[in-house]
Amino acid sequence: MAYRNLLIEDRGAIRCITLNRPDKLNALNRETLAELHRAFEQAGLEDSVRVVVLRGAGGKAFVAGADISELATLTPLQARDLSRFGQQLMSRIEGLGKPVIAEIGGFCLGGGMELAMGCHLRVASEKAKFGQPEVNLGLIPGFGGTQRLLRLCGRTATLGLCLTGMQIDAARAHQLGIVNLVVAPEQLEAETMKLAEQLASLAPQALRGVLDAVMLGGESALPVGLDYETQAFAVAFSSEDMREGTRAFLERRKPEFKGR
Ligand code: COA
Image 1: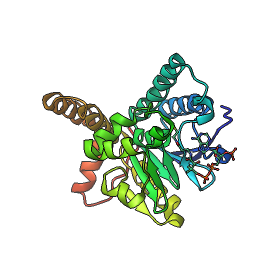
Image 2 (image 1 turned 90 degrees about the vertical axis):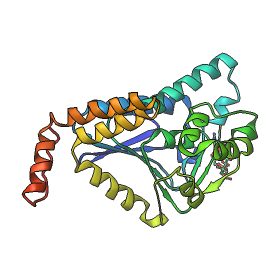
Image 3 (image 1 turned 180 degrees about the vertical axis):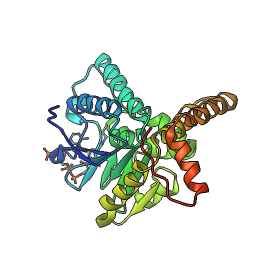
């Protein structure tokens, strides 16, 4: 499948999707959003893909936001459609059923932060910068930022970031629970791939169960969330991998998960 703004590469069971508009700091124009929709749909359909890593080309930015040159000309109705299109992308990533890791090497602003928050795990370089600067443009976040930030780190930090548009560094983002791991810039790719390889070696059905229970349960009342957990727990028992994992423990050997 041909993409103008993405590079796609498979490393074993890990699909690496690179946003490739470095001259625009990988800003999300409509075409790029549409390509991301396609790329994630494809990654979800292919059983051989166990984990997805999403990164930005050029080293300076993960993504510096929605493309401001496009935003500048939108009518309110077009803005509504764009907001929905962006939100649907983040929801598609969140609901993929396999882990998606954002590898954040630099600016992670606006729509970039919203995209990163749609991913399940975030690994950041020490030099990454985070923020929701939309207020500086007379705008507000439109790809789910107000809601996902609220769920990740609470009302105080969300209002602090979204009302002021300030940028924070990776250490602060880590303190706030926005990123999982902060590493030296030269270690970013290796550490991200190490995490991706670890996840790719595990039983996909178990990973899916965790994702479903946490992502769906997080949006539900406790009894509903507990039921998601029970269903996912039971489904894990239908997999060969679960038999292998428990047997290997009892036989004091490493499990060999086959993805079945
Ligand atoms: N949309 C469109 N283009 C963008 C962009 C965005 N969100 N962010 C950066 N770019 C473009 C710049 O226009 C510039 O293009 P040009 O060389 O054709 O003029 C190029 O990317 C490099 O950006 P530049 O601003 O020159 O880099 P910098 O190092 O001086 O500043 C930032 C980096 C991230 C601080 C700055 O680009 C910025 O503030 N970007 C917008 C962030 C934002 O508000 N995002 C939310 C959008 S809703």
